[in-house]
Length: 66
Image 1 (tube, rainbow, N blue to C red):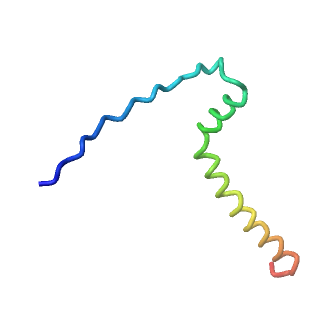
Image 2: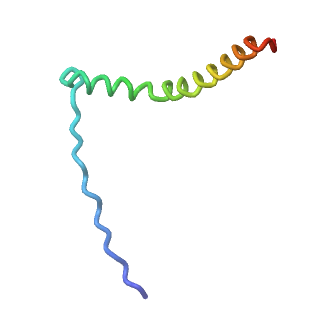
Image 3: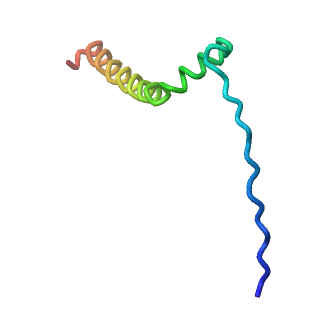
């Protein structure tokens, strides 16, 4: 029977938790942006689609298709 390797438990990482008031302004901005990341992704998806539709409408008006 094959020998099993001894698996050592992972070392715990000590996380340093900064207080919000003590953070630098850039760090605070990053935290705020992390909170709204999903909303920004949605906006990045919707805006180009809306612009594409608007461009199609403008081109159709220019060439008298509408």
